Length: 284
Image (tube, rainbow, N blue to C red; front, side, top):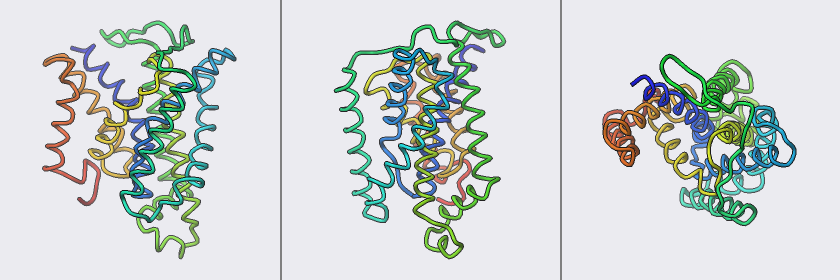
């Protein structure tokens, strides 16, 4: 049982890092990025290419991947997203769904649909935690996710830039009256969002197969985690993700692995009726 519980917790930690970026974009801009996990997929390929062609281990390429995807996030906002901000919901939805199709097609074109894997990274092998045996890659990914989540929380809650982000999230109309450049805050939200999901992709590349549709399941789980944790809450997204990881592991063990996501989504539906604002949300 300890094996199941600990595996679920570490899986949830990585889900949390993916969810945090989605939560920040959603919280600041009131917009769902349906291509969020497909950017993670591209980060996994980027990490793989650095390892295969340059010999750079995913742990060392992690800061480089984060910087690259922070820049990509800001560029995507300026070039694409800025044109649909304030528009109809259907415009925003179709825009990010269009990016899903583009990114998956681009990956399919560049690398085909073959499964790829970073072989023999520094974090290969296994480690013992209590009576559970986990891969080193999964352990490194879990603890790194917690560290990066804490760093993002600190930036948002303890810095002037973070306060400006929160002010923009609370009222984008009044924020300019306080001297806040809303467009810069939106670009920053996309930058941080893609930097965190890029980090998740680099960490997952240590032990997870890479292919063009790898982000699909993670996207659904991230949406559930953000909704359960409370829109815009970094802490809520992480705790909800760990809860999802535990439920997923326990339902796969006690019921059937094929039905583990059914249990997760069923509990989410219960949450919608009981507390629609999520664990840390302040309003429905």
